[in-house]
Length: 467
Image 1 (cartoon, helix red, strand yellow):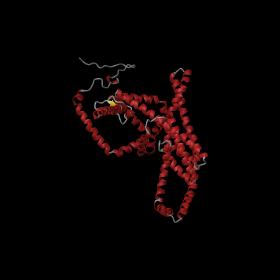
Image 2: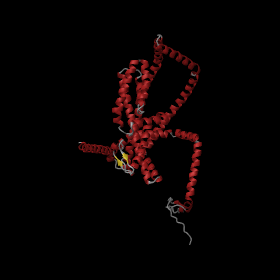
Image 3: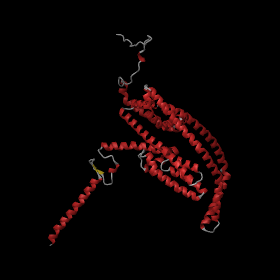
Image 4: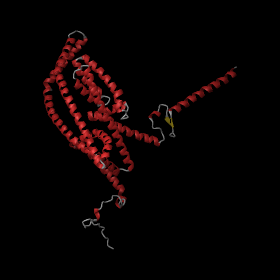
């Protein structure tokens, strides 16, 4: 009997081929070859993967260069993703409050959502552009004046400092002899630096300046393209989210897929709460620093306020990183004002660390001060300034994952997951039962009482015998 080919007719009368229908993967189970040689194939794949990994290590420099080139090409997309992530709360707020009102006037749900999303996206972009323009108009002229004044006054301040040191060195005391020696050696080193290293450093500075200007132009260009990319991301964020979720469920098992989606949601909460909260906190600290320095009549007000506000983005170490060079600039101008500035910064940072920061950030990372320091040092050592800022939320995500794994294993062993219950007196016996510290203490107290009672009974029994 001949096999008849299964065909279907199209609307125009032509017939579809058998393979035109969408194939279904895995419908007939594994093939016989895979059933017979599955173990050999697994061994071959392991060996092949090991060889590929070895050659990848040998070509690690080439791979890193290729990866860097890909990152440089995709910088506009990365900037667009970052901009969209920062503007997403504004878009969500507009959708939350505007969409119900629009739905009352527009019956078509899709049209209402598109109109609301358009208003939200352009509102967020307007806020971003407005902030950039206002900050540029406020900061750039003041920064220019502060830097110009610093350039004009700093040489005179250094000369005055050197003359004061020379006056102190004119005496015959041990301190004056030490200062005189230090000034002479410093002068010789400076002359040697002028004769040997200055020309080379000048050439390097000019070449780096040219490269820096080109990099700034490229960064501005990438940022503008990134703003355009962010518009598309914000308009289609639900579609991108649905596609990613679909891909996760297609690749992984349901249990692993749900775990990945849970960690992704938690990471979004940690990063969003930390980054946006830290930006708001840093802006407030910069504004308070500006008004405080204006009230105290400090020099370089705008320059120092910008330094303090920008470095405040770095947790824990940021305030000190910004305060040290600012204090040096003010001390060169007026030592007493420098002392007032240090006191003011200490008060401002105490206010930020104990009142303002907790109100804005709350416990968004869930890390203690020790782990925050570890995250900053590790991130800063590996990735510089960006690592110091992003190290804390990244470490918080890993800390959350590790905590979940530890707690799940403790629950399987029927042990408490709270760290507070593992005090110095608590323990787990050989049978796996947890003994809280309070029960151990209670048993020890009962044992001591029993020993005292036994001693008293023995003493009462011994007294009649002696009589």
